[in-house]
Amino acid sequence: MTNQDVADKLREVFSLMQLAGENRFRAIAFDRAAQTIDGLSDEIVKRIEEDSLTEIKGIGKSIAEDIKAFYETGTMPVLEALKKKVPAGLIEWLNISGLGPKNIAKIHKELGITEITELKEACQSGAVASLPGLGQKSAEKILKSIKYLETFGERARLDQALEIAEPVFEFVKNLEGVQKCDIAGSLRRFRETIGDIDIIAAADQKATDSIFDAFTAHSLVVEILGRGDTKSSVRTENGRQVDLRIVKPEEYPAALMYFTGSKEHNIVMRQRARERGMALNEYGLFKLTEEKETDFNQPVVASSEKEIYQKLGLNYVPPEHREDRGEFEFYSENETMDLVSENHIRGVIHAHSTWSDGKYSIREMAQACMERGYEYLGISDHSRTASYAGGLTIDDVKHQWDEIDELNEKFTRSGKNFRIFKSIESDILSDGSLDYPDDILRKFDFVIASVHSGLEMPREKMMSRFKKAIENPYITMLGHPTCRLLLRRDSSDIELNQIIEWAAERGVAIEINASPWRLDMDWRYGNKAKETGLFTSINPDAHSIEGIDDIRYGVMIARKAKFEPARVLNTKKADEFEKWLKSES
Ligand code: DGT
Ligand code: CA
Ligand code: CA
Ligand code: ZN
Image 1: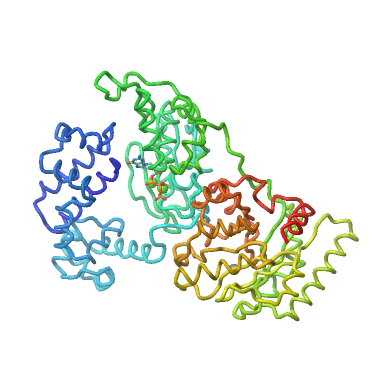
Image 2: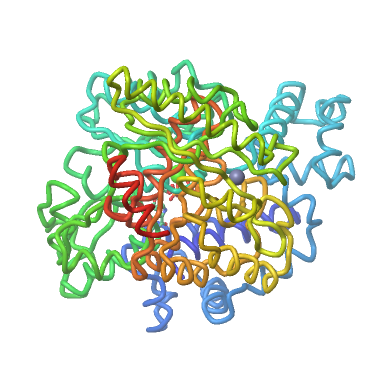
């Protein structure tokens, strides 16, 4: 339980109390307490354990009891009572940006509605506009926010977030007065989905105003959500929120570290600081006073994130590993981790062509790979059972092989150092067998096996399906194992740790499907993969030329999953890749 967790809960109480029309002063006390806890430099848990909560200014006896209950039971009775009192539909209104609890309560009371759909209608019909204190402009603003909520939900995929973050970051970085600038938050950590985009800059205080002016006037900005002395938030064209924070240059390393997160990583960092007689917060690293309080008069000089890590007994932890998943152990003993990067990737594996559901011919895909500096292409069209995706019959397969042979001969004749591998993305049928007879499977250079149907199978059945597929002598790698579509469709019910063990044991690789919709296998299984020596391949699953460039996202995830180049098959040269294929079959 973190200070943030407690503050969030108290804010929730504050919001719900307003929705429930409770006493205003009682409600505000919760908001104040939340603010106090946000600014607290030591761990609230420590205060609870030593029973000194009420010594914190602004935390009275009753709120202290609520916090204690939350610590002990995971819930707050006051919050549970409120949830029973306030209609559930109404609570969702809190996600509508620009609509505060006070107005929610007013609309609910006057119009007697509880659902977002009803609110939408009330905005369109003029009912909201006619309420005192609201008016036409407010109704339009609420309507716009509801539309954003419907269209974009609350999180974005990595590609959607980068599309906004990169131009805004480049813009801010080059503004006058900006000394340093980075993207922080979940995006810097290469998470597969992003809540909001965090940008942080170091600047002289006198430049702050003009930087915020320029930021909020950026062409991608459609709405200014807030602006304070150190932070400004905007909403951009595609519905994403961007927070820009400006800090003093000397605070920059600590602020960048703090706002990069993750929260879980930060918590351990603060503990490490305390154990060493220091306090770490968003402003810097400080010595402790005799009373073990942060001594803001005694900063411990650290001019980079790296130095902060060093002062806390660690080597530099790259942002993509800051998740409290083994990084403390690793980077206290090792200077760096050998990690794959984009320039290691030599071949494009798992691409579709017009033979199945791709947009371009094999020749065009090969050309695009060459233009991007790749040395080989593995064409893995869909197999025959995937008829909805133009899966290849045995006859098609044979014709495709002829075409590939011809293209390869042409490359050789014209002295091009490029080759195409014959592959297939074979469906894993519901009983775990692959989609062609052995004498066809045997003749592919490699076989990717993926599940595309029966995604809802119960776990046990699904697991034996995978087991059988992995035991097939012709399988080279598993494709997108969980079949998830980010923010759209959940993973199948499988136990990936077990599948990784089976695969590693048999020398079967598991792809990192680099499509930003999938990013599957998930980076969270990176520790298991490393432990078992599992191979992967960073595969764009390209259905078009542009799709090839998704490799970028796959590399981010592979780094997060701790893959070194040697365990990524498509870092190999073409002939080494071929050798590996032969040695494994
Ligand atoms: P997101 O936006 O949901 O994808 O995830 P993040 O990680 O970007 O989270 P966000 O935007 O709420 O905050 C950015 C970073 O700031 C977060 O990774 C950690 C840090 N941070 C924010 N609030 C707190 C806090 O109360 N405690 C700690 N320890 N860290 C915090
Ligand atoms: Ca964020
Ligand atoms: Ca944020
Ligand atoms: Zn597939």
